[in-house]
Each structure stands twice: as C-alpha cells, then as structure tokens.
Image (cartoon, rainbow, N blue to C red; front, side, top):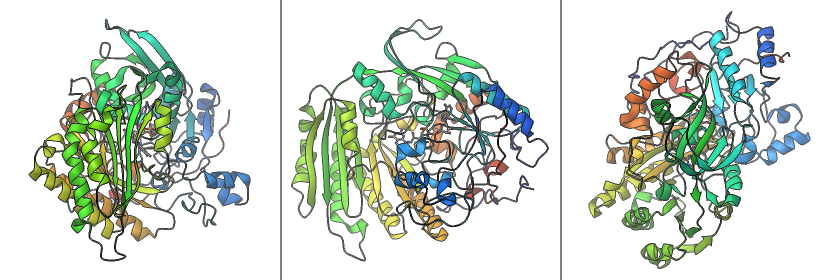
Length: 615
Ligand SMILES: Cc1cc2nc3c(=O)[nH]c(=O)nc-3n(C[C@H](O)[C@H](O)[C@H](O)COP(=O)(O)OP(=O)(O)OC[C@H]3O[C@@H](n4cnc5c(N)ncnc54)[C@H](O)[C@@H]3O)c2cc1C
C-alpha cells in the first residue's frame, strides 16, 4: 500500500561524522496528519468536490511544470518551459515547480529537464514527486480557513507554498494538500497606521498580501518614494519564509531585517480562525512569527510593515579574475584568496557600522564584491571604502574587470544592475542545490589573530569544496542587522544580531549529474561549513539559508529562542497541523510524511496522483 510506513534510520551519521540529535521537544511523534491516498481516512472524490465548491472552484490538480516536455517535446508549451527553466521568476508562476529540483522530486520520482540544456530529450515518466496532487489556489483568508478545516477533519498533511524558494523543501510535501498563496497580490500604503488595540501610531506603513514578491513590492512603493527591506533577489516573497524567518538584504545594516519592520499581521491560525495579530493583541504569537519561521504558526494573509523614505543606493562594485593551474591548485596556499579575505575582514567593522551592506563572492579563479550604502550622501561610500578600494586597485597580478562607484537614485536601478550576469551570483535556480551557512560574530573581527582564523576557515572550506566536487566557492554576506540590537520584539535567531558575516557555501547538480555525485556534492557542502562551526561554538545559521541535513538544528537555526518558540507553537497549534522540516515543533526523522528526505533513511513515498476534481 502506498501509505505503508517503511523502516527508517533516524540516526544515520551526518557527513560531518556527527549523529543527528534527537528532537528535544515532545510534540506528537506520530503526527495526527499522516493520512495518505489508499487509506480509509483519505477523502472521497465527492468530499474533494465539496471542498472545491466551498472555495469557489479553487481546488486544482497539479501539472508538473515540465510535463509538456514529457508528452510533446515539440510543443510550444515545452519550448516555453525550456526557455525559462533557470529563470527564478518564471519558476514561481505556477504551483507545479519549485526553485530547486531537490524539492520537486521524491526518490527517483521527478519531472525535470536538463538545467543547462533544457531542450535535450527527456526519458522516463513525469511524476509528481513531492508536489501535491491537489492544491488550493488561495485568494482569500476564507479559502485558507476552509482548507485548514478540511485537512483537520481528514487528518491529512498541509503544506504552504508561496514562491517555492525554500532551501529545505519546506514548501512542498508529498501527499499533502498544498495551499498556494502566490496569487494574494494586494498592496497598500498607509500614511498613518495604528495597529489594532495599540496606542502607538506609525507613519509610512506598507501592507502586502501573502503572495507579493520583492519586485512587486518595490515596484509598488518606489513611486511613493518609499524603500522596502527586500533581499537580493526579485522573485523571493516578502510575507512567507522571508518575512517570517528573518529577511536580510542590502538595507539590512541600515534598517534591520524584514522581521524588524513588522507592525501587524493578518493570519489564519490552526483553528481556522482569521485574526489580526500584533504586539498588543497577541504579543507571543506576533513575536514568534517575527523570526520563528514560515509554515509553523499560522498562514499569513497580510503583512504590515515599516517603510523607509527613499534614499539613493551608493555602490562600490569590483570584479577580478586570476589564473589558476590546471591541476593541483590549493586554495589554502593561494595568496590572493588569503589577502582578499584579510583585507575585507579588516574593513568589515567600519563598513557595517557605517550601514554598508556587502555581497562578496569568492571563487577559485575570481571574485565579485559589492558594497552598498543607502544614503543621501552619495560621496560617503568612497571615503569609507577607500582603503579597500586602494588595496584591490593596486593588487598585483589580477585581471580587474570592474572597479566602479555607482549612484542608483532608485532601488529598481540598483536591482537591475545587480542582475548583470557577471555579478548576479545570488543563487542560481532551476537545478539541484545544496547550501550550508554560518554566522560569524563581530567579535571575530576585532583582532589580527582572530581575522587570521577567519581567513584560514574560508580557504580551508573553499579548498574542501573544490577538491570534493562542491565547486569551491564561498559567499560572504554582510547584510545583517548589526546596528539593530535585540529589542526582545522578534523571535529571530539572536545570533543574527551580532553577526558580521553570514557565510554561505553552496554546490549545484543537474539531471545529468550521476546520483553518486549528487550525494557527494550534498555531503561536501554540508561538511564544508565545519571550519566555520569550529570557529563559532554555540553559534548559529540563518534558518532560511542553511543545510537541511543540519543535526543540531534547534540550536543552530533558532538559538536560545527555541524553547519559547516551541511553547508558543504548542499553544497556537496544539495538534501539530503545521509542520515542516526542522521547523519549530518538527516531528522528527521518524515522521513518515518526510520519507522523501534522504536523511530519514526511509524509502521514499512520492505523491500518488489523484483524479480530476469535481465541482
Ligand atoms: C535565489 C534565492 C535568493 C534568496 N535571497 C535571499 C535574501 O536575499 N535574503 C533572505 O533573507 N533570504 C533569501 N533567500 C531565502 C528565502 O528567504 C527563503 O527561501 C524563504 O523561505 C522564501 O520564502 P517564500 O515565501 O518566498 O518561499 P516558499 O518556499 O514558498 O516558502 C518558504 C516557507 O514559508 C512558508 N510560507 C510561505 N508562505 C506562507 C504564508 N503565507 N504563511 C505561512 N507560511 C508560509 C512555507 O510553507 C515554507 O515553509 C533566498 C532564496 C533563494 C532561493
């Protein structure tokens, strides 16, 4: 039977040699929501049809995005999918695709194209994998409320997908009913705003529906001369995982994280009730949803947040290439890598204190570095970065391809620049991808000895990745809320607050990559963060940009907030209706609904296709 529970090995060793920790919580380990097709509990076609009626015909049958290429490769539909296969915006526009192939597939069940050659022939069948067979195309809080009542009644799993960017696959779950929030595209500007039940009056408040993406947000608020604290990439949602899990971007050092801007949320809680929550009405739930992660506490309908009067984005942009030997290259011995990381680390405290955000990409044979200062003083960035600029400009033996200061009067202009192919390094999509990450606290940047230890960690991590099929790149983000100390108002990982760098290691695979190599790439990236862990005992990682295989996940992703976050979770969602991989209150490796994650050791149970929906 498709829903049979297979043996599992929850304590499989981690790539770093550590055992995953058993969950410390006492949420129900056998979920109330594990009904799958073939079991008596699974709704009948007429029950599905009834749900469809109550939500105005918005219960839909999933077609994987690449399906037309499996039925008719010469069709226009197939060509259209192929020509946008690695376009992050296009991948968000239908339920039937995720940004990464990892989270569409379950075991061998998948429906993918060859990422870098999408018109090459496909073989085998197009399967749903982790994609739900049915999804609710949500337009209103009422659609969501009805969907939640339905899954409660039948004991089936619910998943919530907004844009499908999640790096842990938390927006898809095989055999779940999916709620797709992408079409909830309202946006409003409030000159004055008073949260329900509060005395405080706010000015310049934005309000966006659950489905608004970064680009839509700045396109709406830019003509009003307002800035939104979006991230680096246009297609990421504001209100879902980004706005509930953290949300860092080029405005981070100046204004803080997205969760720092939150003023009020409209949500539907697990009991199906629509509520308006803020620090006056529901202080605990509001605190938890400001950083405790998406998909955990409630379905967010509308996000109200602080806007900021527009200022220009002033940017120092640098790129250089250098030659490396065809074989035997050792990044740990590479002078240019060591010198660049040393110089950047020496300048980083100054940059951060002045509100400069940094995106630094270090590869075996080249680097890209962007320093961004939102300010009316369009000259300030040149004096603040002068030492860094002189160091780079005079560095011997490198081929400098960009070394420019820019002033972008509008956010959209900065963003267009950031999409220049040679610098658009903030995350390829439409392929398989593994990430790992770590916060490096500011105290590591205050002495030459400690800076030397950072440099060693960077080159060791890169070299490990380079020699083990990971590609050898490292991203050093300086986009955190360093100038916004914890005010106890957000449930976000406290490690964010004094994080100077968010280091990210990443590696990619495609449908052409042999299975053994995929596993090796994943394990390499997972293990490559080890030098940074060794530098930061008890430290953490951004819950949205980490390693889904992380064993010590509660401490790593939520830090000292975990116990409080869990207590609030139990209060608002006592039956564990909302559950996602390594989220607060996660059911653990033994939950049969997580069989698609290789780390469970379970044999994968992909989605069982369902018939058409009646109405
Ligand atoms: C290419 C790329 C670039 C990125 N750049 C940045 C960046 O610059 N800064 C940054 O901070 N992060 C960045 N991220 C990480 C990003 O914040 C996370 O992937 C985040 O989870 C995306 O949220 P989403 O709602 O768009 O995606 P989804 O994958 O749709 O959702 C993510 C999680 O939120 C839940 N969720 C979605 N909508 C709701 C809702 N309405 N109510 C409750 N739960 C919901 C989902 O169930 C899931 O658990 C990037 C990711 C990618 C892939």
